[in-house]
Amino acid sequence: MSSTLDPALQSAIERVCLPGIIIGHRLISPGDEYALRPDEVSAFASSATKVRRASGAARIVARKLLAQLGHRDCTVPKAPSGAPIWPAGVVGSLAHDDRVAVAAVAKSYMSYALGIDVEPAEILPSELLDIVATPQERLQIRDDPYRGRLLFVAKEAVYKAVFPLDQTFLDHHDVQINFANHKALLSNGRVVDLRFCIATHLIVLAFLRAQP
Image (tube, rainbow, N blue to C red):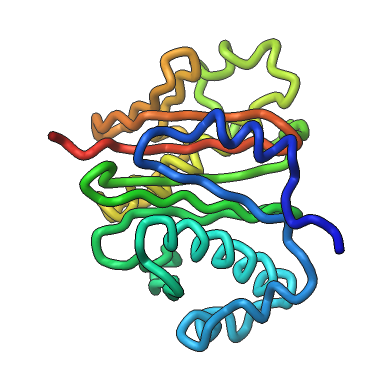
C-alpha cells in the first residue's frame, strides 16, 4: 500500500506549525471522493471526480486534526461562499492542488482567523506575475526561483483567513506581502501574520491571533 504522506513535505509542515495551530496533509488518492459525508457531498454534486476526490482528501485531513482538538468524527460542510463550516469554537482552512490536500485548524480562543494554501514548487507563469505582484513585491522576487508563485500562495491564504471576518473580495494588489517580516498588509489596514515552507510544494499559513 502506498503512503498517503510526503515525508519531505511533512517535515516542512512541522516547521510551520505554531503553538495552538495544527496542520496536516494527505497525498490525494483514488477513492478519497467517497470520504465526503452526505452533508458535505451535496455541495460538490456537479463537480468533476477530480474535485470531489481532492475535497474528500482535504476533509480526511481535517477530521484527523479536529479529533486532536476533541471534535471527533466531524463533518466539514461547504458554505455558499465556498468556505468550510467548522465546529463551534474552531477556526480552520482547507486547500489542495492536483496532488496534495492540506488543512489547518485551531481553537478560536487561540486564533480567530486561519487561512492556508498550497501550490506545487514550480515557476509561476510569467503572464500571471503582473496580476499577482505589486511593484514593491516584484523587487523582492528578483532571485526567487519560483518567480512569484509563493506570493500567489500567500495571497490566497490571506484571503481565506480574512474573508470570514470582512466579507470583502480582495484583488491580489489589495494584499502587500513582506516575507522578511512574515507579514501581509491589506488595503483596509489589517495586518496578517504569515508562516511558509518550501519543499515539494509551497505552503503558506496566514493567521490572526486571538487577543488575550
